[in-house]
Length: 358
Image 1 (cartoon, rainbow, N blue to C red):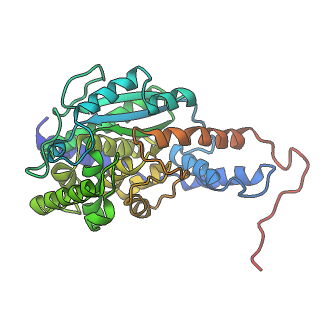
Image 2: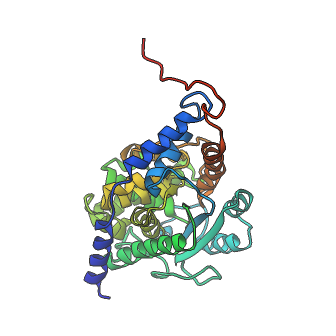
Image 3: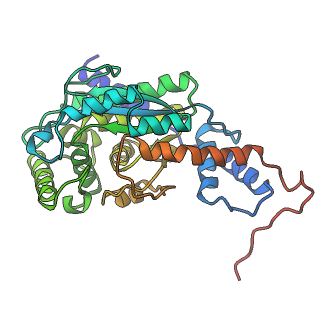
Protein backbone atom coordinates (compact mmCIF):
# COMPACT_ATOMS: atom_id res chain seq x y z
CA UNK A 1 0.00 0.00 0.00
CA UNK A 2 1.42 3.43 -0.92
CA UNK A 3 1.89 6.37 1.45
CA UNK A 4 -1.44 7.98 0.64
CA UNK A 5 -3.21 4.64 0.95
CA UNK A 6 -1.84 3.97 4.44
CA UNK A 7 -2.76 7.43 5.69
CA UNK A 8 -6.23 7.03 4.18
CA UNK A 9 -6.52 3.68 5.96
CA UNK A 10 -5.57 5.35 9.26
CA UNK A 11 -8.13 8.11 8.76
CA UNK A 12 -10.82 5.54 7.98
CA UNK A 13 -10.03 3.63 11.18
CA UNK A 14 -10.15 6.85 13.19
CA UNK A 15 -13.53 7.73 11.70
CA UNK A 16 -14.89 4.47 13.12
CA UNK A 17 -14.24 5.63 16.70
CA UNK A 18 -17.43 6.38 18.62
CA UNK A 19 -18.10 7.71 22.13
CA UNK A 20 -18.27 5.26 25.01
CA UNK A 21 -21.69 4.02 26.17
CA UNK A 22 -23.21 6.49 28.63
CA UNK A 23 -25.92 3.94 29.37
CA UNK A 24 -23.38 1.35 30.52
CA UNK A 25 -21.69 3.99 32.70
CA UNK A 26 -25.03 4.75 34.37
CA UNK A 27 -25.74 1.05 34.88
CA UNK A 28 -22.32 0.60 36.49
CA UNK A 29 -22.98 3.54 38.79
CA UNK A 30 -26.29 2.00 39.83
CA UNK A 31 -24.48 -1.24 40.63
CA UNK A 32 -21.91 0.61 42.77
CA UNK A 33 -24.66 2.52 44.60
CA UNK A 34 -26.47 -0.73 45.37
CA UNK A 35 -23.45 -2.37 47.02
CA UNK A 36 -23.62 -2.56 50.83
CA UNK A 37 -20.97 0.03 51.65
CA UNK A 38 -20.91 3.82 52.04
CA UNK A 39 -21.68 5.58 48.75
CA UNK A 40 -18.65 6.47 46.60
CA UNK A 41 -16.33 5.16 49.32
CA UNK A 42 -13.90 3.57 46.85
CA UNK A 43 -13.52 6.96 45.22
CA UNK A 44 -11.67 7.05 41.92
CA UNK A 45 -11.63 3.26 41.75
CA UNK A 46 -15.40 3.34 41.30
CA UNK A 47 -15.13 5.83 38.46
CA UNK A 48 -12.43 3.66 36.85
CA UNK A 49 -14.78 0.66 36.77
CA UNK A 50 -17.59 2.86 35.48
CA UNK A 51 -15.34 4.16 32.72
CA UNK A 52 -14.41 0.62 31.71
CA UNK A 53 -18.12 -0.26 31.61
CA UNK A 54 -18.64 2.56 29.13
CA UNK A 55 -15.74 1.35 27.01
CA UNK A 56 -16.97 -2.25 26.99
CA UNK A 57 -20.59 -1.13 26.45
CA UNK A 58 -21.75 -3.26 29.37
CA UNK A 59 -21.97 -2.99 33.15
CA UNK A 60 -20.80 -6.63 33.30
CA UNK A 61 -17.17 -5.58 33.77
CA UNK A 62 -14.54 -8.33 33.55
CA UNK A 63 -10.79 -7.90 33.02
CA UNK A 64 -9.58 -11.46 33.40
CA UNK A 65 -6.76 -11.29 30.83
CA UNK A 66 -4.37 -8.35 31.04
CA UNK A 67 -1.39 -7.47 28.87
CA UNK A 68 1.39 -4.90 28.92
CA UNK A 69 2.54 -3.86 25.44
CA UNK A 70 6.07 -2.42 25.52
CA UNK A 71 7.25 -0.56 22.43
CA UNK A 72 11.04 -0.72 22.06
CA UNK A 73 12.89 1.71 19.79
CA UNK A 74 16.07 3.73 19.47
CA UNK A 75 16.35 7.47 18.98
CA UNK A 76 18.93 9.15 16.78
CA UNK A 77 18.99 12.23 18.98
CA UNK A 78 21.10 10.23 21.46
CA UNK A 79 24.04 11.33 19.29
CA UNK A 80 23.63 14.79 20.85
CA UNK A 81 24.71 13.51 24.27
CA UNK A 82 21.34 14.01 25.96
CA UNK A 83 21.37 10.75 27.94
CA UNK A 84 23.42 9.19 30.72
CA UNK A 85 23.72 5.82 28.97
CA UNK A 86 24.42 4.67 25.44
CA UNK A 87 21.97 3.42 22.83
CA UNK A 88 23.07 -0.19 23.35
CA UNK A 89 21.10 -0.28 26.62
CA UNK A 90 17.78 -0.30 24.73
CA UNK A 91 18.40 -3.75 23.25
CA UNK A 92 19.81 -5.15 26.50
CA UNK A 93 16.73 -4.16 28.54
CA UNK A 94 14.37 -5.17 25.72
CA UNK A 95 15.76 -8.72 25.74
CA UNK A 96 15.54 -8.77 29.54
CA UNK A 97 11.77 -8.45 29.17
CA UNK A 98 11.82 -11.93 27.62
CA UNK A 99 13.78 -13.50 30.49
CA UNK A 100 11.78 -11.74 33.22
CA UNK A 101 14.85 -9.76 34.23
CA UNK A 102 13.49 -6.22 34.17
CA UNK A 103 11.42 -4.20 36.60
CA UNK A 104 8.33 -4.30 34.41
CA UNK A 105 8.68 -8.02 33.72
CA UNK A 106 8.93 -8.92 37.41
CA UNK A 107 5.99 -6.64 38.28
CA UNK A 108 3.90 -8.17 35.48
CA UNK A 109 4.70 -11.71 36.61
CA UNK A 110 3.68 -10.77 40.15
CA UNK A 111 0.42 -9.14 39.03
CA UNK A 112 -0.66 -11.78 36.49
CA UNK A 113 -0.07 -9.55 33.47
CA UNK A 114 1.25 -10.95 30.18
CA UNK A 115 4.12 -8.86 28.83
CA UNK A 116 4.55 -8.32 25.08
CA UNK A 117 7.68 -6.40 24.05
CA UNK A 118 7.68 -5.18 20.45
CA UNK A 119 10.72 -4.12 18.42
CA UNK A 120 9.18 -1.23 16.55
CA UNK A 121 12.49 0.47 15.80
CA UNK A 122 15.57 -0.68 17.71
CA UNK A 123 18.94 -0.02 16.09
CA UNK A 124 19.82 -3.72 15.98
CA UNK A 125 17.98 -7.02 15.77
CA UNK A 126 17.30 -8.99 18.97
CA UNK A 127 15.12 -11.86 20.15
CA UNK A 128 12.26 -9.39 20.70
CA UNK A 129 9.42 -9.88 18.16
CA UNK A 130 10.30 -7.71 15.18
CA UNK A 131 7.80 -5.20 13.82
CA UNK A 132 10.53 -2.71 13.00
CA UNK A 133 9.67 0.43 11.07
CA UNK A 134 13.39 1.24 10.71
CA UNK A 135 16.65 0.75 12.60
CA UNK A 136 16.14 3.71 14.90
CA UNK A 137 15.08 7.25 14.08
CA UNK A 138 17.27 9.95 12.59
CA UNK A 139 18.83 12.64 14.80
CA UNK A 140 16.01 15.16 15.13
CA UNK A 141 18.50 17.90 15.99
CA UNK A 142 19.77 17.68 12.40
CA UNK A 143 16.89 16.23 10.33
CA UNK A 144 13.33 14.96 10.80
CA UNK A 145 13.22 11.91 13.08
CA UNK A 146 11.28 9.91 10.48
CA UNK A 147 9.12 10.33 7.40
CA UNK A 148 5.40 10.94 7.65
CA UNK A 149 4.89 7.51 6.08
CA UNK A 150 6.93 5.89 8.86
CA UNK A 151 4.88 7.69 11.51
CA UNK A 152 1.68 6.36 9.93
CA UNK A 153 3.12 2.83 9.76
CA UNK A 154 4.08 3.02 13.43
CA UNK A 155 0.56 4.03 14.43
CA UNK A 156 -1.01 1.32 12.26
CA UNK A 157 1.30 -1.22 13.92
CA UNK A 158 -0.01 -0.22 17.34
CA UNK A 159 -3.62 -0.40 16.17
CA UNK A 160 -3.06 -3.89 14.72
CA UNK A 161 -1.55 -5.10 18.00
CA UNK A 162 -4.71 -4.06 19.86
CA UNK A 163 -6.85 -5.89 17.32
CA UNK A 164 -4.77 -9.04 17.82
CA UNK A 165 -4.80 -8.81 21.61
CA UNK A 166 -8.58 -8.34 21.72
CA UNK A 167 -9.01 -11.39 19.47
CA UNK A 168 -6.78 -13.31 21.91
CA UNK A 169 -9.16 -12.45 24.75
CA UNK A 170 -7.38 -9.59 26.49
CA UNK A 171 -9.79 -7.24 28.27
CA UNK A 172 -7.40 -4.41 29.12
CA UNK A 173 -4.00 -3.25 27.86
CA UNK A 174 -1.27 -1.39 29.68
CA UNK A 175 1.34 0.61 27.78
CA UNK A 176 5.09 0.76 28.23
CA UNK A 177 8.24 1.61 26.33
CA UNK A 178 11.98 1.11 26.22
CA UNK A 179 14.24 3.44 24.31
CA UNK A 180 17.23 5.44 25.44
CA UNK A 181 16.55 9.12 24.69
CA UNK A 182 12.77 8.84 24.64
CA UNK A 183 12.10 11.40 27.37
CA UNK A 184 13.76 13.87 24.97
CA UNK A 185 11.43 13.01 22.10
CA UNK A 186 8.43 12.91 24.46
CA UNK A 187 9.23 16.36 25.83
CA UNK A 188 9.52 17.69 22.29
CA UNK A 189 6.20 16.16 21.20
CA UNK A 190 4.39 17.35 24.34
CA UNK A 191 5.85 20.86 24.15
CA UNK A 192 4.62 21.26 20.56
CA UNK A 193 1.18 19.68 20.99
CA UNK A 194 0.48 21.66 24.18
CA UNK A 195 2.16 24.82 22.88
CA UNK A 196 4.19 25.00 26.09
CA UNK A 197 7.78 26.18 26.62
CA UNK A 198 10.36 23.41 26.34
CA UNK A 199 11.73 24.41 29.77
CA UNK A 200 8.42 23.51 31.44
CA UNK A 201 8.02 20.18 29.65
CA UNK A 202 11.52 18.76 30.05
CA UNK A 203 12.92 16.84 33.01
CA UNK A 204 16.00 14.83 33.90
CA UNK A 205 14.80 11.56 32.37
CA UNK A 206 16.84 8.64 33.70
CA UNK A 207 19.10 11.03 35.61
CA UNK A 208 20.89 14.07 34.18
CA UNK A 209 23.04 16.66 35.91
CA UNK A 210 22.05 20.32 35.82
CA UNK A 211 24.39 20.82 32.87
CA UNK A 212 22.96 17.76 31.14
CA UNK A 213 19.39 18.96 31.64
CA UNK A 214 20.28 22.40 30.24
CA UNK A 215 21.82 20.77 27.16
CA UNK A 216 18.79 18.49 26.71
CA UNK A 217 16.46 21.50 26.71
CA UNK A 218 18.68 23.29 24.18
CA UNK A 219 18.67 20.28 21.83
CA UNK A 220 14.86 19.99 21.98
CA UNK A 221 14.40 23.72 21.36
CA UNK A 222 16.85 23.51 18.45
CA UNK A 223 14.95 20.62 16.85
CA UNK A 224 11.59 22.35 17.19
CA UNK A 225 12.97 25.60 15.75
CA UNK A 226 14.59 23.72 12.85
CA UNK A 227 11.58 21.65 11.78
CA UNK A 228 8.66 23.86 12.86
CA UNK A 229 6.22 20.97 13.48
CA UNK A 230 2.52 21.77 13.09
CA UNK A 231 0.89 21.53 16.53
CA UNK A 232 -2.50 20.78 14.92
CA UNK A 233 -1.14 17.71 13.12
CA UNK A 234 0.20 14.94 15.36
CA UNK A 235 1.58 13.04 12.38
CA UNK A 236 3.72 16.03 11.48
CA UNK A 237 4.88 16.40 15.09
CA UNK A 238 5.70 12.71 15.54
CA UNK A 239 7.55 12.50 12.23
CA UNK A 240 9.72 15.55 12.94
CA UNK A 241 10.52 15.27 16.68
CA UNK A 242 9.01 11.96 17.84
CA UNK A 243 10.12 8.35 18.09
CA UNK A 244 8.94 5.00 16.78
CA UNK A 245 7.93 3.94 20.30
CA UNK A 246 5.67 7.00 20.51
CA UNK A 247 4.03 6.23 17.17
CA UNK A 248 3.37 2.63 18.20
CA UNK A 249 1.93 3.66 21.56
CA UNK A 250 -0.25 6.32 19.92
CA UNK A 251 -1.56 3.49 17.77
CA UNK A 252 -2.32 1.38 20.85
CA UNK A 253 -4.37 4.23 22.35
CA UNK A 254 -6.24 4.69 19.07
CA UNK A 255 -6.67 0.92 18.75
CA UNK A 256 -8.26 0.84 22.19
CA UNK A 257 -10.85 3.34 20.99
CA UNK A 258 -11.40 1.52 17.70
CA UNK A 259 -11.83 -1.94 19.23
CA UNK A 260 -13.35 -0.94 22.61
CA UNK A 261 -10.44 -2.02 24.78
CA UNK A 262 -9.47 0.12 27.82
CA UNK A 263 -5.85 1.26 27.57
CA UNK A 264 -3.83 2.27 30.63
CA UNK A 265 -1.21 4.97 30.21
CA UNK A 266 2.03 4.56 32.13
CA UNK A 267 4.08 7.70 32.80
CA UNK A 268 5.29 10.71 30.86
CA UNK A 269 6.36 8.95 27.65
CA UNK A 270 3.20 6.89 27.40
CA UNK A 271 1.14 9.99 28.19
CA UNK A 272 2.87 11.94 25.41
CA UNK A 273 1.82 9.19 23.00
CA UNK A 274 -1.73 9.38 24.38
CA UNK A 275 -1.64 13.13 23.74
CA UNK A 276 -0.69 12.49 20.11
CA UNK A 277 -3.55 9.98 19.78
CA UNK A 278 -5.99 12.52 21.23
CA UNK A 279 -4.73 15.11 18.74
CA UNK A 280 -5.72 12.71 15.96
CA UNK A 281 -9.07 11.88 17.59
CA UNK A 282 -10.41 13.65 20.66
CA UNK A 283 -12.89 10.84 21.38
CA UNK A 284 -9.97 8.47 21.96
CA UNK A 285 -9.49 10.15 25.36
CA UNK A 286 -12.64 8.40 26.59
CA UNK A 287 -10.87 5.03 26.28
CA UNK A 288 -7.77 5.98 28.31
CA UNK A 289 -6.95 5.52 31.99
CA UNK A 290 -3.95 7.18 33.64
CA UNK A 291 -2.12 4.89 36.06
CA UNK A 292 0.26 7.23 37.87
CA UNK A 293 1.78 10.69 38.04
CA UNK A 294 5.32 10.65 36.66
CA UNK A 295 8.03 12.78 38.25
CA UNK A 296 8.65 14.38 34.85
CA UNK A 297 7.53 18.04 35.02
CA UNK A 298 5.33 17.92 31.93
CA UNK A 299 3.09 15.12 33.20
CA UNK A 300 0.52 17.31 34.96
CA UNK A 301 0.00 19.45 31.86
CA UNK A 302 -0.58 16.36 29.71
CA UNK A 303 -3.06 14.83 32.15
CA UNK A 304 -4.95 18.13 32.31
CA UNK A 305 -5.18 18.29 28.52
CA UNK A 306 -6.36 14.67 28.35
CA UNK A 307 -8.93 15.26 31.11
CA UNK A 308 -7.48 12.34 33.07
CA UNK A 309 -6.71 11.94 36.74
CA UNK A 310 -4.01 9.45 37.74
CA UNK A 311 -4.78 6.80 40.34
CA UNK A 312 -1.30 6.43 41.84
CA UNK A 313 1.28 8.99 42.93
CA UNK A 314 4.44 7.12 43.92
CA UNK A 315 7.18 9.43 42.57
CA UNK A 316 7.93 6.82 39.90
CA UNK A 317 9.96 7.65 36.81
CA UNK A 318 11.24 4.26 35.64
CA UNK A 319 9.18 3.76 32.50
CA UNK A 320 8.81 0.34 30.85
CA UNK A 321 5.12 0.29 31.88
CA UNK A 322 5.94 -0.14 35.58
CA UNK A 323 3.35 2.40 36.74
CA UNK A 324 0.64 0.85 34.59
CA UNK A 325 1.58 -2.60 35.91
CA UNK A 326 1.45 -1.34 39.50
CA UNK A 327 -2.07 0.01 38.95
CA UNK A 328 -3.50 -3.25 37.60
CA UNK A 329 -3.79 -5.15 40.93
CA UNK A 330 -5.55 -2.13 42.46
CA UNK A 331 -8.00 -2.15 39.57
CA UNK A 332 -8.44 -5.92 39.94
CA UNK A 333 -9.48 -5.43 43.56
CA UNK A 334 -11.98 -2.73 42.62
CA UNK A 335 -13.55 -4.94 39.95
CA UNK A 336 -13.81 -7.87 42.38
CA UNK A 337 -15.64 -5.71 44.93
CA UNK A 338 -17.90 -4.41 42.15
CA UNK A 339 -18.72 -7.91 40.93
CA UNK A 340 -18.85 -9.95 44.14
CA UNK A 341 -20.01 -7.80 47.03
CA UNK A 342 -23.58 -8.17 48.26
CA UNK A 343 -26.11 -5.38 47.95
CA UNK A 344 -28.13 -3.47 50.55
CA UNK A 345 -31.22 -5.47 49.61
CA UNK A 346 -29.30 -8.77 49.92
CA UNK A 347 -28.51 -7.80 53.50
CA UNK A 348 -31.96 -6.34 54.18
CA UNK A 349 -30.40 -2.96 54.86
CA UNK A 350 -31.91 0.31 53.72
CA UNK A 351 -29.97 1.88 50.85
CA UNK A 352 -27.65 4.77 51.64
CA UNK A 353 -28.94 8.07 50.29
CA UNK A 354 -26.98 10.90 48.72
CA UNK A 355 -26.41 13.59 51.34
CA UNK A 356 -27.76 17.00 50.46
CA UNK A 357 -25.46 20.00 50.78
CA UNK A 358 -26.29 22.10 53.82
